[in-house]
Amino acid sequence: MLVFAHRGASADAPENTLEAFELAFTQGAHGIEFDTYQHSEGIVVFHDRHLARTTNGHGKLLDTPLQLLRELNAGNHNQIPVLSEVFSITPKTVWCNIEVKYLHDAKTWVEAVKADIWKSDISLDKVIVSSFNHHWLKEIKRHWPEVCLGALTATYSLDVTLDAKGLNARNIHVALDIVSEAFIEEAHSAGFIVLVYTVDEPEDMKMLKSWGADGIFTNKPSLAIKTIT
Ligand code: G3P
Ligand code: MG
Image 1 (cartoon, rainbow, N blue to C red):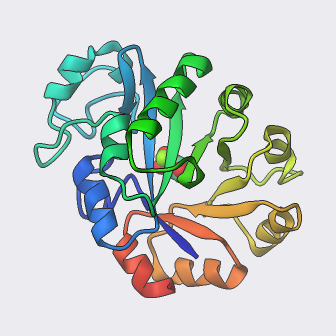
Image 2: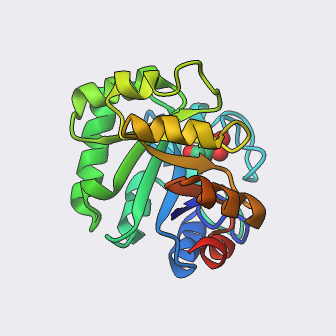
């Protein structure tokens, strides 16, 4: 079962920072998950629409010029990273799950992500693009047919695989609260990989392993590696 560090090793370092990603690699995570916004000046790695919870700034991320964003303290004096910086520190053996929290234009987004991959050591076969907004995923896939998609869901739909099939996704990323053994079986029989978020309790990690989940997103990769691998 794969262990993805959710927003990096975010139980032990400020979320979505280079420090949290470095720590995830040290702790042996198989992958990192991080959240991104297509800001007018670049792809910014950040979870919330507003700055206040995780930085010393205030207001909306998308309304703030990149230079000002970069002057903020995202915890332990880390800067808010841009996508190319995350790629530049990621070993090529580690999976990168780019979660799209805001997309303005799929074509320029795809061009920018491809350029950032090309400048780094990572390869496309270790990249997963996910989002709760399946319309954005569809647009991204249209401009980038070979990219691996993860259809995020917090809903146990009447047809579990409908959107993932429509998107030609490889993965379904499902919330711990609603996943079940039957959900995983149904997704597996349709050929999808199932990753579950956000799993920090050893009991849940063991349960998901027994159900055959392919991986988890956890804020505690070190604990997960110890518990389930
Ligand atoms: O990608 C899994 C998980 O990160 C989705 O929820 O809100 O933590 O980005 P959130
Ligand atoms: Mg996320």
